[in-house]
Image (tube, rainbow, N blue to C red; front, top):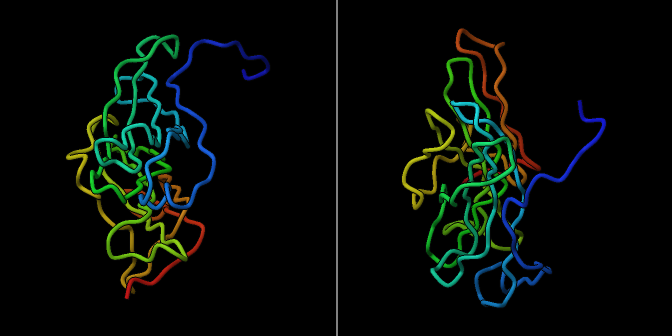
Length: 186
């Protein structure tokens, strides 16, 4: 019940990621290859899934990408990496994946997309996007940036997005998305 913990396994390993503005902007390729922002959830079969922001594949044009690994034994061991949002433009940085499931079993992944074409680099715009899945594992074409979360006034959550589903608010419930701030897409 969370009173004690034991080490089971290492999900993945990366190298330290000290802040380097040129590398984060996709302008330099240094030895940093960190893994950030893990999120754990269960897929449609009850298997444990770790969703990760990953900087280890810069050589193939991914400044940062979102991937996941699955454990079939409750976290003792992990399967292969699967790319979920991976845009090989050397600039885009999808990150901070959060996954929720609605009352009908459909999965939603929210994430920020930093340094995407058409958005300001500084001050940094981290537009919140989402994707859907029927099983929590298959999210569509990894090169697709997904759907921008925005309201009818073209405002969108910006940075550190989070998404949850509530059974309240309508016949199908309500998805609630939040972010660090709100930006208007002009």
